Image (cartoon, rainbow, N blue to C red):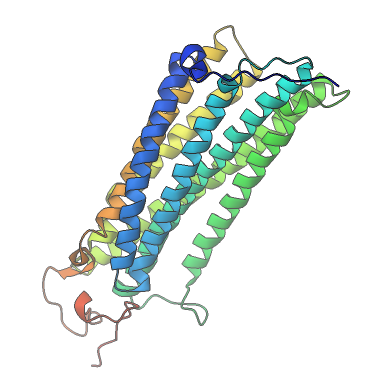
Amino acid sequence: METITIRRREDDFAMYATSIDKAIAGLESVYMLIGLVLFVLSISSATRAQSLGRRSPFVAIAIALASFVIGCGLNIGALALPYLIRNVQFRNPVSTLKIFHSSDGLRGAGAFFDDFSHMAALSSAFLIMWNRGAALLPRQRRLGSLGIDGKAMLDISLLVVQFIMAIAAVSYAAVNTGLAVVTVPGITLGEIVRREHTALSLLYVYVAITGVVVADVTVSALVLHRRVSRLNIRDAPTRYVASYLAPLWIVHFLFSLAIVIWSAWQTFHPTTSSSHNVEVVNLISVIEYGIVFFSISSIILMLGASRTVWRTVTDEAKPAHDFQNIRRSSTLNDDYQLDDMKG
């Protein structure tokens, strides 16, 4: 029976890793620390919220931050694993491939948790808009005994489809592409290319669904903000989503779309510099991802910094027959429902 001798060295990563890999690992480590701090703040904001309507966005962003931290840890593991076992003496080359396949598996899992963190952050924005729509626009038509209107049902459906496509894209790529296919007996080059095309097709569908969700958030925020402004109401949560969060998600989506298109081109048109180019793009992606995600998380957490942020302010008094009475937040019920004024 063949044996495998493992000689571990603590400085393997420091000695053999490229400067870009070291930079990515360093950034991911810093991201983990920042993510943990923001996670604690999100839990604090959720516990201080006075009602479920206010609490739910902070619970969602707490889930997003937890997923983000897990994703960072998996990404670091994917980078470090090949270097930590660099001195493994293999008599069977297949064992080497399995080790690197494990690194690919960690990378795929990290990508899923990264995607899920953005999905949870998007759900936090939807929760903010549902809450403010219920509080400020009581004429909104609703479906079902739970008070969930048709728009909310559409939002939930899109998030579910996005989640399913993320699982499908990551799972298929992990099982059917890269080093996973090398050990398949008798596999042909044509079959490998076919699997790569299928994986890219699933990725395209996921990116397209993400674009639809981002468009949904953007349009919903702008419409809600416009309707609220027509009532001469200044509402900070609505303004934050429309003015700050939506543009950040648009930027992130366009950047992700460009990266996917570029990666697809590199996959089927490799050059001698492709490996270095991929590393550089990965570093840029990590920087962009961290900046956008922490900006989104911080903006949402700012809404939990003070209870007065959720109070609505009217610029001038309106006649009772023009619109329904809007109560101050201090006198609202926990569910933020408004009573119609009786004429």
